[in-house]
Amino acid sequence: MKSSVLDSPSLDRLAVHTITTKPWSLAVAADRFAAAGVSGISIWVEAIAGMSNSEVRNTVQASGLKVPALVRGGFFCDPDAQERVRRIDNNRRLIELAGEISAEMLVLVVGATPRAPLDIQRDWVRDAIENLIDDAKAANVRLAIEPLHPMYSGDKSCVNRLTQAREMCEAIQDPMVGVAVDVYHVWWDEALESEIKRLGELDALFAFHLCDWRVPTRDMLNDRALMGDGCIDIRGIRKLVEANGFRGWNEVEIFSEEHWARDQQAFLDDIVDRYKDC
Ligand code: ZN
Image (cartoon, rainbow, N blue to C red):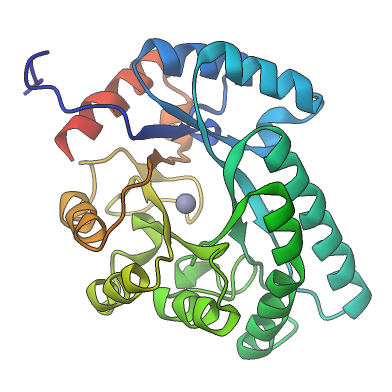
């Protein structure tokens, strides 16, 4: 049932990731998001390929939207030490870019390689992030470690649980470093509640990403569901992060071949409706 205007929850904290409406250019996405009442746009690097920083900034400013995050940096893991240095340098450039487009944070998908043990890779990640803290401070861009579901531990992320991300924050101990909680990646974890509590105590709850887990999932990457079309207790997790001090953005991040094939305006309208329900 649709809410009436009078009881509509506020969209003040609703942001949408550009990847969610991948067929749209940045300019179209910014226009349509703003027209739909969305307040923020988290910008994927892919969405701004070929654009200058000032073009990106002007496009976003014209829409009036805020930029919760540049997505995504990280990918620190490689057995070759020189390659790891190159990847850290690449993240320095992304932090600078994030600062120039007024993004509040850079999301870190930390990376993984099948050619090294996961615990050693997590040490590389911690070293890499420690190397980037001065850059993050200079650009006033926070770094959000995003744990990814264990199905990605072979090639995308050696940080797969909130526990590992929280332990990394505790080891680094810097207010610029925290965690992005994406319901898709962490909903199944029995430690969800206790870890969100501990992250709240550390002031390390930086981001909250929304979508749903489709059952059955047909593709490991591009089959995320619209909120309400899967098995995640989104409302419950949202209450949990808010009860532990989170006051940041609710960012809708859906990669889905099914939804990309639809009319993107109808999809965006559905996102706003479903957001009001969760
Ligand atoms: Zn996410």
